[in-house]
Image (cartoon, rainbow, N blue to C red):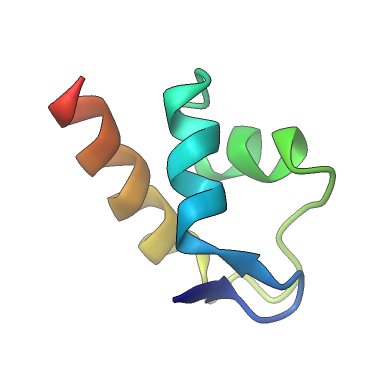
Length: 56
């Protein structure tokens, strides 16, 4: 599933960034070499990161 259309970031990318230590959407995006543009994806990215942190 695509999380961020602006940057073509997929859910699996955000999950991997969270597993690699990102604790916020901004950190995950930086780890992927980009940044949020319009911001509509940030709540979804946060939820994915929270799920990964809870499962760890």
